[in-house]
Amino acid sequence: MENWVLILGMLAITFSIRYSLFAFPDLRFAPVVRQGLHYVPTAVLTAIVVPGMLLPDGEHWQLSLDNAYLLAGLAAIAIAALTRHLLATIGGGLLVFFLLRWALGQLPI
Amino acid sequence: MTRSQEFTQGARDMLPMLLGAIPFGIIFGSLAGAAGLTPWQTIGMSLLVFAGSAQFIAISLLGAGVGLAVLLLTTLVVNLRHALYSASLQPHVRHLPKRWRMPLAFWLTDEAYAVVLHRYAVSDTSPNKHWYFLGAALAMYLNWQLCTLVGVVFGQSVPNLGAWGLDFAMLATFIGIVVPMLRNRPQVAAALVAAAVALACHDLPYKLGLLAAAFSGILVGVVLERRAAFMVEEVV
Image (cartoon, rainbow over all chains, first blue to last red; front, side):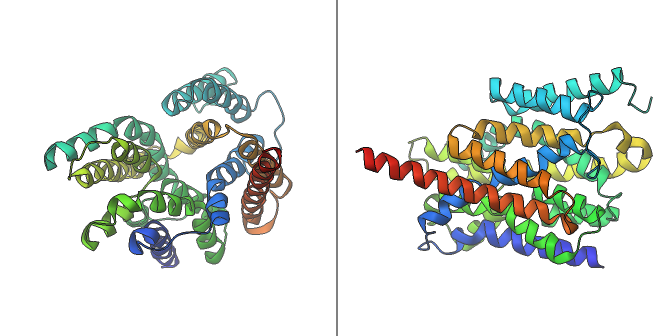
């Protein structure tokens, strides 16, 4: 039940944001708000990615060479910086990730 | 171009985005159960919310036992960027009736925004560009629903799926989105500060570290951008 409340709440919030300026054709954000919104994807996504690489389970630091999340994450960053190509980054990153996990014996096979 | 040509072209131009979203959608569908969503709730979230990053963050926070208020606040922060897309595309859709603007807004994802903006930037006078928007948006939407469904079914039949570390596809996707954005000093600083704060605050209750990191990164980005603009003015 609470999950459906969550889903409907997320629907209301997400739709309100997306519809915000489609709904009011004459409304405009102040320049400082516009600038701030410009940094939201960078800040939020980085704040998810970096802990995801360094603390894969969300609790314990894994600054070690058998941490495939860290090594493949660094590889994905390099691919993204060089190619600026989303699919190449996803494909290359996953390839490195699974090769590492396979080589380190971390796959359930 | 005719309406159906615009519609088809929009859907076709989304193909790379669809491919990129496939692992994302399947992984969402397969991981949502472990976070406590029933199969119908998982499908319902994809149908009603239709926001990949927000859905992922919601199930990861849900799995960690985070409360409803923080979940909704996080959804707000994570999706704030859509207000920019809404602002940016608004001049192109303001002439449309509400029955068009509402569904197009509902389907306004990062991917659709990028592709549709590109179409509107072409200086032909086609009166049917909103059909291109609709085609691109619907392709993304149907793809997301299908992938969620595959994930729900596949995830149930392979209970060991979580041990494969498929969640790395999400990190790789976010990396592929963020790194090309780091083209100037304020953006790089925003990323570095957000990362440092997220790491420093990772053990805060209810993952409040994510919110702290987001607001710190945004603040630093804006301050540096304003300072850079100020210094240019001084030199001139």
